[in-house]
Length: 227
Image (cartoon, one colour):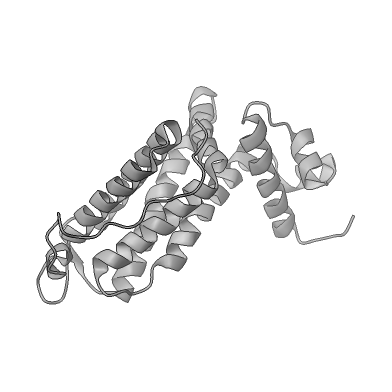
């Protein structure tokens, strides 16, 4: 077996764990099945992770980064702040559509942690991480397109985490792409309306389009998500 840095080995095992858990469920994912997926020995696993808690924390962080990284890359200045925000949401949503099993796993991880004594802090850390990542994206956007918010950043970050979390779960259950796209437009309008640009106007009003006349982003036309 080729030697590799421990950080890279941890990443390899974490990604293998995500695949196994998405396929078999969190409770049925064993260290043996994860090692088989990664093509490493059990001794390598125990060298990288001292406990299942440590593995699950790594899995939660990695899954969150998967979805947020595409949004982070999509956030670059466009004609209006609203368009920039919507592009970030769309990048995240494309990831949901392409990786439904991975996003379903996030909810299973939460329930598993809440129901297993001693693991409750992982669920709390999971949702703190969601808020932290939205805080990062908001600050990134403020550096690119300076604006002032009418609410505290940490409140907006928690709001965005709650809205996208609920929307993702609803979409995984109901699978209505058109409604999900419309809701993303509503969230975008709300967020843009909370931002005041340099000219003193809310961005939602600065583009000159009435809510009913604003074109919505095209809906995802790929295969339906499994229920």
